[in-house]
Length: 290
Image 1: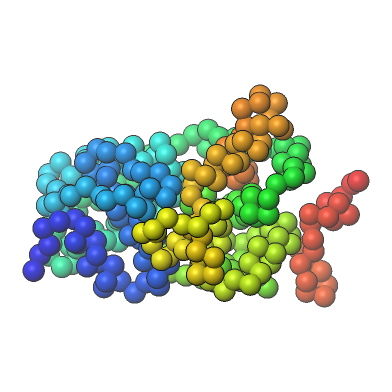
Image 2 (image 1 turned 30 degrees about the vertical axis):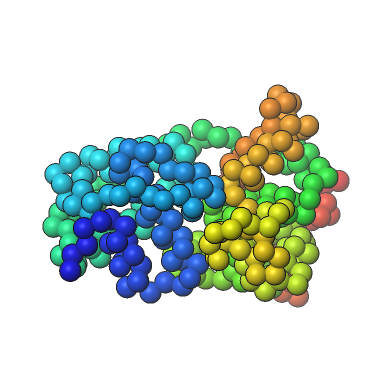
């Protein structure tokens, strides 16, 4: 039977898709976000994005002649809050769901036809420079924050990518995440490699980056640490902590945003020594110069 509601169509698509638990969670969050955008409402931020009850949206809305324009407007609004990589991933997830719904005969038209992410200025948010990074990593900060900052800078991943990491996503030996369907492959360097083992001592699963306190009742199991009961660190809290901590090293005094940790160029694999081990390029003697 053809579903009437968009949310029901989403669940049927996810049930049929060959996805792991982590990927299924990310797909559900992305597809639910489009429900808010389709009715011209803002997407909730951080943890609230996972908890908020989405609006009721008829699936037939995507079969309406104005669906392409409605999605284009939704995409433009989402581009204000999401970086290009996140936007591309969420658009790709919706495109896959729409294609499956069309094969089921639930949609006749293709509302995704010609839909592309809007062009954004490449340097709208300038990355932190070498001196700024040195000042940042010299700050005394809790281990969780240090890991977060190093991962964001060294992997080039989005804030959402890093906050979505679970402990069992990590391949510590090879300094990268395990390959998962629908998930980006993240590779880090010596800074994160030194810190990650300290952060995950005694943990075999659950979110990598945790809140300071136990999670509230009703928090999804996927966002709970099975050992401590603490929840997944939210975007909002991570951003607040970063801005507050960096006020002391920001010449303007306002603090920096997490997006400034993204490198100016795509990270490259570290050089390997003749013995086949990765060289620690974060050590002064490996950078050249004093």
